[in-house]
Image (cartoon, rainbow, N blue to C red; front, side, top):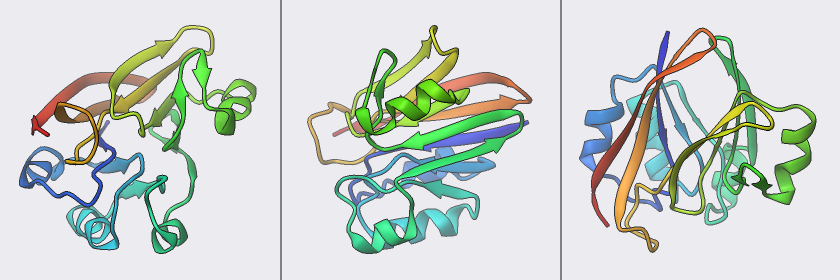
Length: 165
């Protein structure tokens, strides 16, 4: 069993509540737009099992450190993370074929700043967009997600609100 913190769109903003909510997680996944190497270093110092993808605002140094697409297994779950990914039925063209030809069990994306946890009933996967944890954007609340993965099951999905933007 693993507890995973899922966050996106920090845009260089650190909130002390992030460590309070995610510091004890087995892994932390960032779905892009971290915003700065300093912030990435802070996440990595907090949890050595930090995984991330680069986002559209991340500079060349961030792009060299983090891939655009990340695919891996945790427990018995196949995970795919991409910053700009779309939603079930409307996946972004950059990842649509990959998802359709070889669907993961969990697809995580960011970019929209819209918190969504929803199944793709056609491809039999769970899609998570944790919303945005930073101050930049049009979202009203800053959010992240904590999820437990036990074998091939998702349990204890918690939406955490950090506060207003």
